[in-house]
Amino acid sequence: MQHGLKRNLFIFAGIAAGLFLLFTLTEHSFEGAEIKPVEPWVVTPFILLLGAIAVGPFINRHWWEHNYPVVAYTLGALTVLYYVIVLDNVPRLLLTFYEYVSFIALIGSLFVVAGGIHVKIRGKSAPWENVTLLGIGAVISNLLGTTGASMLLIRPYLRINKFRIKPYHVIFFIFIVSNIGGALTPIGDPPLFLGYLKGVPFFWVVSRVWEIWALAVLFLLAMFYVIDTYHFKEATKKQQAEAMKPDHPEFSGGLNILYLVIILAAVFISHPIMIRELIMGAAAFASYYTTKREVHEKNEFNFHPIQEVAILFIGIFATMIPALDWLELNSSVLGIVSPGQYYWGTGVLSSFLDNAPTYLNFLSASFGLHGASVDNVHHMDAILGLATTDALGLSNPLQPGAFAITGETWRYVQAISVAAVFFGACTYIGNGPNFMVKSIAEQSKIEMPSFFGYIVKYTLPILIPLFIVVWFLFFRNS
Image 1 (cartoon, helix red, strand yellow):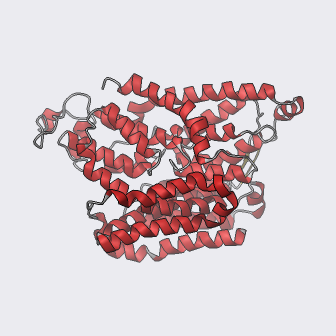
Image 2: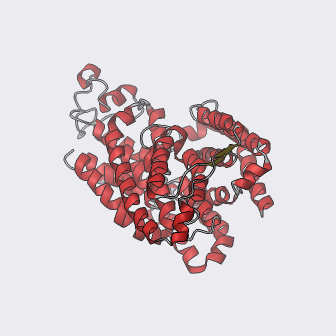
Image 3: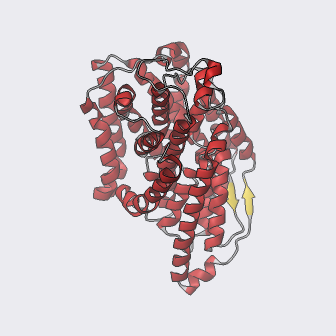
């Protein structure tokens, strides 16, 4: 089993490396990929894939575990054939495939490297200790990214709570560490990094988002504390006694810290094409073969979680192309004109679509709303409130019917940034680390809720009220 998983990982790595020359030679062909009108029915494979992910394990888990690759590849192939044969838009597919390779290179390399770091924390499985660990994870997410922090902390977190582990322990970890915690820096979550590449200053996000971040994290930590305290009191005396025993601290695999730094540094490399992904892949390769076997055994490390993510998300990336293209072509006629509306629009789609392209589409739409271009550095400064519009000659609309760049236009970017990161916690597919954390938990024999169970039992009663409060306090009147 492990051999097959390793083989599949190397197949993906080989494809990425083999296409290095292709992307180098054809970079111009997909950087200018044209967005062509699509028929609404073309989003059907995307809807079917989401439905399959939601109900497949529920109807027949054994069948799904053995056939989900066929489902993902088949539905993805339908969309690919439409773009090749009907639209004759191969560059659009190349661009999406490159984005997919970048996505898998980042989360895959972090997964492998973090799997070579064994951490045993000297802590107890009491509510306050869990709250402290989750709070630390929320901060670390901004330094290592939500994927890096999740892969580094999920195993120690599960080990601490092994005597009384419940699904809610994992769900709140996904909420706080795998998503909302990473809202302060471009390293924290992919959408914010794309904004950084477009010209949003590195520390602008933290200066505009820290209050919202603190409110959300504290709210979730408080909710978790109440729930965990209740279950701790309900646990048997034996479970309580075992949970209160502090473990002996342990750390091994220190060389992987170097590989982790290399991967994070590579994030900021954009040219030449694919060099960033190759560096990440090389770091993961070196990590796996220089880490002692006993370290991987202590972490119960295997490639199944990243294989599941890689296969499902290649289908998601392919089938969501028509949905994103339709959104970009029609965003101006949807009647979304206020930051509050951009908050909900970005958030809802980020729950089911990849939040990085969703962020970019809404960011572009918000700039167009004010007659500005997201690719113009002067317009960026004006929208973000970093320069006066008069000084830039932007006090008047740049296109007929557009709004002037006046008032707190930065609130549009604030709303889009918050929503893209926060709402990624709403489903298992909202953000890459969610699925990996779920898979690791299931390998530890934790009965995780189904796709719909996650939404009904946790998203609707916990996250949605929080998101309504955020909207009411920060975006209702903007």
